Amino acid sequence: MDRLLIRYDEMTLKSRRKRRFFNLCFKRSVVSALKKTGIEDYRLELCDNRLIVHTDSAEELIPLFQRIPGIHSVSPVLKIPFKTLDEIVESLPQECLDYVADCSYAVRVKRSGEHPFRSMDVGARVGGALKSETNWVNLSKPEKTVYLEVRDDVCYLFYDNYAGMGGLPIASGGKVLSLFSGGLDSPVAFYQMLKRGVCVNSLFFNMEGDVTFSEALSVYNYLISNYAHGYKPVLFVVEAKEMVEKLREEIPSNMRQLALKIIFYQVAQKICERSSHMALLTGESANQKSSQTLQSLCFIEKQVDIPVMRPLVGMNKDEITAIAEKIGTADYSKHVKEVCNLSEGPVITLPKPHHMERLGDLEPYVQMCIENISRFVGEVELPEINNQLPQLSSLNELIVVDMRYQFSQSNFPLFTDIQLSQFGKVEDADPTKTYLFVCEYNVRSRAHAYRIRKNGGNAAGISQKQYKQYFEKLIIARSRSGQVLQEV
Image (cartoon, rainbow, N blue to C red; front, side, top):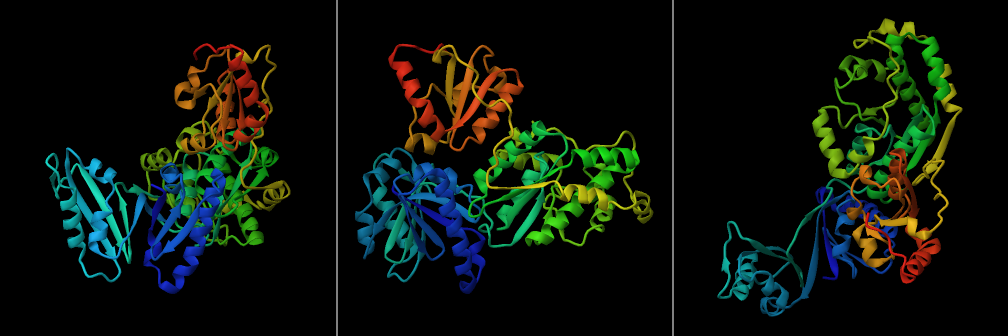
């Protein structure tokens, strides 16, 4: 099939006047996502509450469209132009007959436009045409289903519906600033707001140096490369190590958590005021931690004038973890070290107004942060010191692992040794070998290599462009010369 039928989610609830704006936002997201994968040969066709994507790589692109906010579902379809119902029936391809052979089946029809027949008529005629001696109709629990969408003078035939993210297209709902730590909660909050059509930028407080920053960036880069389509996410990084040391010296232990959170909020507010963010976004969940009791949340929020959005406030840890696993951030987040706990014993969990008087003026801490802010646009290069490959006495020591998505592997084939699925877990890496991981943009590959090095192995990451430019010819020559790698 050479096209995808994209069904909008909540956009269909908007008025026709407003829908034009949402369509522009959605089209921008789709073009951005296709550009990230390197796809140039495609055509977009708006069709009422649907978008048709014409491309030779239709089925390979399904996972990509499942990660674009605003999409209810995706189907690879076959287009059947018609003038009469008979033409629909006569145009059924052989693959459709083969699909329902030797099983029970049903035909489901949706129809839009003016026609001299009903949806039930289409289902009955097509269902009858598919009947043979070896199959049978079962409208209640069919083993296979044939779907038809009849829209004006075109019928779209398909067999599968793939669920999308739902929600609204990005950039249709304003801009917020996320307090991003890279742990389990903040990436899920980021994702939840993307689904609501909001452009999410992030603020990270680097309190322990490059290692912690690198671990958080692995989560951040994965998240924005997979889900943040249609805009360039901005990451503000505060070098906060000196501020934290000063806080430890001057603030009582039982109040440090409150003070730290208030500083985070107030720094975020200053950034929001300068860059037109409408609200602050956090991954806080009610009563999950001492600084997240209802009293603490209310106390901290009163110290700023900007709205605070908490999409996870009513979720427990299992629910948050389930979303993190679904979107793919959980594996990255579990490597991020928790560095926000500055207390050395019991802490205040029910703060009252007089506690703010005891904390005193926090503005000097806020100013220390403001003076040490860096700004990054798009994916951020991981601050790793040892990403370069160690010296090799022979190319035979190198194992190249292709961890790109299936679409990229099909459309941009590279000569490598093994797939990521053959590699196994990080713990399974052979410490006597050197691994070179290849992905589209050197985001996931670099992060994966970093975890292997952290585990005592030898590894580096590289983008598909860099690999093709510097390594592929050498690996092909190695293969032709008879140097065969031992099995991993």
